[in-house]
Length: 156
Image (tube, rainbow, N blue to C red; front, side, top):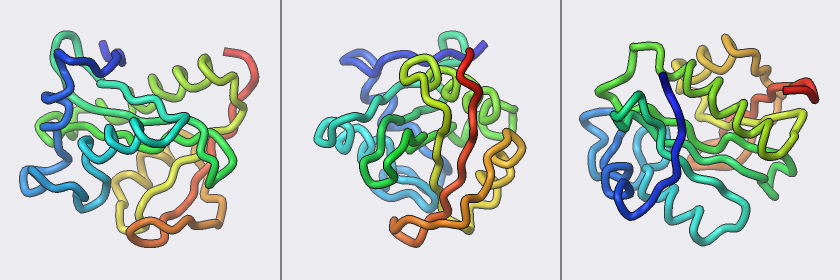
């Protein structure tokens, strides 16, 4: 069963070493997502971001970053990554559900935004299967990223 946990002095290096593909190791900007190293740095400088490690039992499998985006003026699931060793096993959808519930509990939000590169078809399929809908808007990233929205009920 998946759970999220704080990033701390015991696990931060392991979190930084996670990556989305074998060919993405040691890159600050991975092909479809910013590295965990960059995300941790961003969260330490910009206010409002929460960073968590994603575990399957005792095994670290991923990373997430979420919070209030002043740029989007809403709650954003900014990063969700599963290490390439664990992709294709259903962890992405389970992690997405877990993080959405965490955000809903923490912020009592009724909408979650998520942005990603248009070429990231895998992410698009995952988010749409979960109920995220294309807003028709974009935000400037390394490329113009699509903005998807998930409407939530107020009760958990």
